[in-house]
Image (cartoon, rainbow, N blue to C red; front, side, top):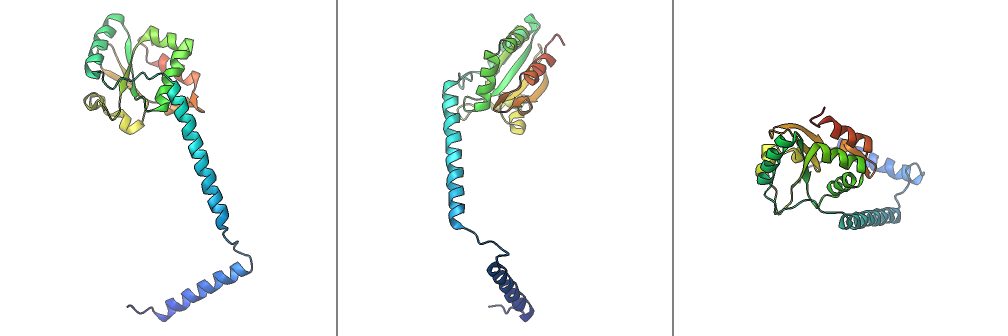
Length: 194
């Protein structure tokens, strides 16, 4: 066993003594164990409620991602079609597990001005990323943007299949949804007409 130098031992006793003295004079409020437990229980309850609400919302939203799709083949077909139609390709990468991915899809599909803007100017594709199919080859081709930005992430291709922009989605969010102005500006910026 190591010997503790007398100065360090004395300093330790003085420190402990001053803390006990301070607590006895009410300078340091005592910790209430029951308050800590109540806070933990309340926080756990709030987290469970939030998860339950998110699961209920997710169950109601359409599931646009197909884990069984051959994404590489699908995108090649879109490139061929995009050339003919003079449109760009908007790839929304994510999965049916991602509440923000589903929210974005629902928002665009149910907002007439955004839906028209997309339909008139883009060929739209939902690129699946999930445990069943990570589409590693396709994501690798575009620099794996989900690794950096999370999901959803948007990959914009021109009519020749060249990647011209990657957009993270959090800058398009507002509250628990998306900002109409920000989403519209994003779509307007990457059309072939701009």
